[in-house]
Amino acid sequence: MMGKRLRIALNVLLLLWVATGDVMERPVNGVAPPTLAQSNRPHYVSTHLIVGFRPGVQLPTEATVAAEEQPEKLFQDLVRTNGLREIARLVPTLPLPRDRQRASEALARRAPRSLSEAALLLERHGLDRMAVLRFTRPIDPRRLAETLLRRYPTVIEFAEPDYVLRSHIVPNDPLFSFQWYLRDRQVFPERRADIWAPEAWDLTTGRSDVVIAVIDTGVDTTHPDLVRKLFVNPGEIPNNGVDDDGNGFVDDVSGWDFLRRDNDPDDENGHGTWMSSLAAAETNNALDIAGVSWASRILPLKAGDERGNFQLSNIIRAVSYAVMMAQFGVRVINMSFGGVGASQQGLERALAAANDARIIAIAAAGNDGQNNDVTSWFPSDLTTRLDNVVAVAATDRFNQLASFSNYGRVSVDVGAPGVAILGLTTRNPSAELGRSDGLITGNGTSQATAIVSGVAALIYSAYPESTPIQVKVRLLANADQIPELVGKLVAGGRVNAFRALDRDEVPPAPITDLRLLSNVTPLALTWTATGDDGHVGRAAFYDIRYSVSPITASTLRFAVRVKDPPRPQPAGTGETWAIPLNLPSRTYYFLIRVFDNAGNMAESNQVEITVP
Ligand SMILES: [Ca+2]
Ligand SMILES: [Ca+2]
Ligand SMILES: [Ca+2]
Ligand SMILES: [Ca+2]
Image 1 (cartoon, helix red, strand yellow):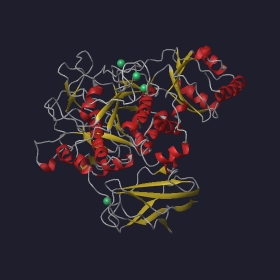
Image 2 (tube, protein in one colour):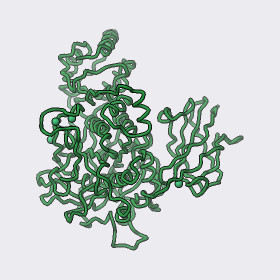
Image 3 (cartoon, helix red, strand yellow):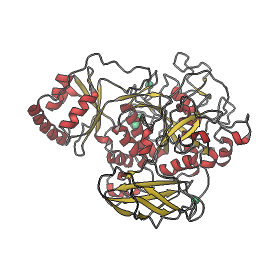
């Protein structure tokens, strides 16, 4: 059934269409399906287009509708000219809270506690208005997206190809077949290249109510080291053919298979099992390997196929599903995949909803040895736009950036071990990464990412009320500095699980003297540095934002974040920061948030500055 407002909008659309004539794109012959080879060209599904409709436009309530059966002439014409087959929602129709205002106020303070609260967050970011248009034959999605956006800006908010991203492993022979990355006993203490796991485990070994959603190729659910580690949805009665919790997924007890659209996220590749085991394999059970967060549970969300290809539309679905499950403790999303890319608005919105649901998303920086500040890489680049995305590079046993690892002083946050990483894999030997003994060793920013996901779960276990930005700051501010990584990564070093768990409840003092520095060109801000604890010590990070209207708690996320802020100086030091030269002339409001290494935050006074 089509919403009335969409119908009206589409009738308007049709009139415009008739008037302008050439909306339809010709099907492009010979567009190759996505291939395995990693190259510097984005791949996409040639028969899909992701569309986000404007607020007020309602999609059909069914998960998927046949385009042919839609009476709207827009769809009828798309059926005829481009072979539109069906329209599939990215998120099921979900119940919303009765008292939206109250729910919204509660969600400013804590994670969602019900499906309807999660639905409110998904709606806030427009996930309820997103769909995949599926065609019977190839289209040119980028051209069709541009055309639809240009002609119908009041109906379509964005349209983009259904990009195909890749898992980030580097096939290689193992150098070492043991877990040096957790505790390296082979070198002098001052040259350790591991993440200090045993020291962290003295503080916490993780909590079972902190859940890691692994968006990957699935998991070998009967692997003895993982079988007791899977999340169980308390709202679902298994195998009764009924969607008991009303979330749009029937019998979704332990994850979902967004690829095959069933409730068995079986691993046809091995990559997902590997990542799950690094983050949270059962530990201290005298079997196979140790996970980073022993007690955390795994929510396998299968979006990658047998070759490690991930469709963007399925990734958006999986992130949205993780938001629905935030009520049961999902706090981490592992994203060991990516690709060169164009803007991915659908995924950015889903991850923004995840941020509001108090979920951090750990993303692989990629394995092309490139500078991501120069050549963009999705989704890890979203770290420069979202508080809850962390981009991870790979380091090796010799405290070097792995030769294959992408890096970027602005767009890649932190390193973690990613060379010769032992983990579990599917025991199906015919799978690409399958091994009959269920053990595998190899390299990649994928592995580094899964290790950081485990550390993030430890942080949430020790500090359950943390916000994602606090966890992100803990990961970055407590990294072990590595000279070679300074200037190549935001944090300039490798994650240290022990230091990231530092107990510190004293925030920096607020900055009270932020002002425009007079008589300098270009314009610059000046203020006095506060400290880690009040006016003592040295804070860890500045987050500088500006907006054309005063910044409030609710508008903070719309304010522009400065990509490359200065590092805090010791308390009492005078700081200056030059305002970017390329700002258009007008009045701006500037705000600085200052964080200590435990993610405690204080704000500055706000200054109004007119750029001439
Ligand atoms: Ca369900
Ligand atoms: Ca059921
Ligand atoms: Ca399946
Ligand atoms: Ca402090």
